[in-house]
Image (tube, rainbow, N blue to C red; front, side, top):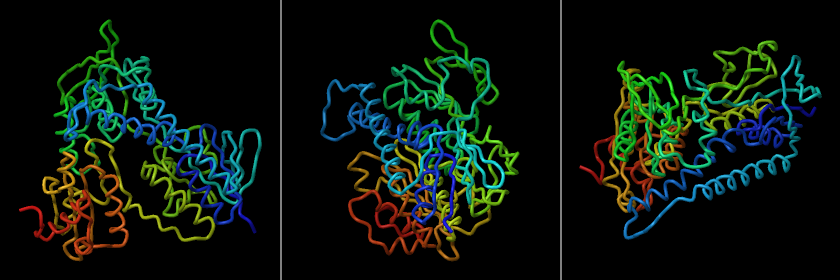
Length: 456
């Protein structure tokens, strides 16, 4: 009997689940009340990286870090950068809509609410399904403070569409979103201040990597304040005054705009999930290893389950859930999901940090290789490192942390190695092309044994 699956949400988790379910022979309805592609394609990952592409190229030319090139009177056409961003977004969202159509997925542009017994209300209609997949994503976390309602205090979506570049901006939050926006704006010569409540920026990232990036940003003029808690934002004739406490001391800074980048929260409000019996934990849908909720026949994937708020994790979860509904055994491994920061230089990691290995009492070794010994990085005028954490008993890779140009591309090799239960020895025996930045991965593996070729 043909299975009928209703998917609520058309972001990466939802559209990936829809396509895979259709490929496996299901009748699929995808309900999305806003734009296909969700936050990632429309107001998140893709537009941010499109603007970072512009800012990074401008910054290199402006700082004369491209060897042998003298570029006078280099400037940014912000409106053209916005056009490029939107052109990219449109091409990708149109492409996803085409893929859904090609695979026979029925897309309904209406709000959908799950009900009991496999029923789903889509707009004014009601359908019954074999299974329902919640893929409702997340939304920017909001902070309540005096001045939070000022028009100059914005979230990340609004910051991507400024009519004009501000001269200065305060970014509240030093996590991935805050750091990427800090990179975008300082590269475009905007004065940037970061306020991070915790003792370091990028709290979930390996300390060595986070420390290196902070040093780079501060050298570029970014004012990074840690242990800083926002108190209020006041509007005056000369702009905004941002009041905060820094390690208990009252401080303030002035700026044209304030960006709240305090993370994201699961988008589960107003769906009546409690009435259906779906269990929530602080707004996130509770799921098992197959992404089944507490209600038989209802699954939850992507940001709404709060496990890993990354688009690629969401897609993998959506594919796994669709496969499970259709009788497959999912192979999603939450321990091997890369995390990427599109800063300058980029940061990418997979697996555990050295701090976690130490705190967990693991018997491990660290291989660390600086890009000062990597030819391709020197050619490009870049710096950074590759760090590998390997288990001493079996040699298996436990974690990899990269600060380097194209780190977000190289990390896939580390993830594949870990997925295959690979060892540092496996990496050493794999010939890496020269000259490439990825050679540093090989050298870091050699460093696990204390025998790198291109460093002392």
